[in-house]
Image (cartoon, rainbow, N blue to C red; front, side, top):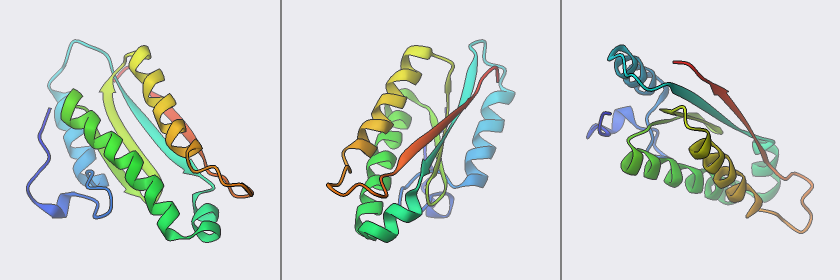
Length: 135
């Protein structure tokens, strides 16, 4: 797996993760190498993020994004997964198709969201996590 580039033009400024173009190039290059293990793409979309951000303020929204980004950077550094941040609330991971690790990732993402529970959680965010397997 590739290391993160020194060039900041390939990184999303807030999260420090690959931007869309670099993420897709890295995934394409990696999958062209014909790895024997099955791989998958995980798409994480934070639902109701704009409403949460508008209601509780940008600092609260940025806190959530930074928590998720730090976790994904750690996945890249420790497990060599390819991770990206495409827009305000869309994150992606290219990783081995491992159901145990996928469950752990799901639980961790939901944990970060649940930490933001407010007393008047009218605009509480949630996550939509989708999976594309057999890459």
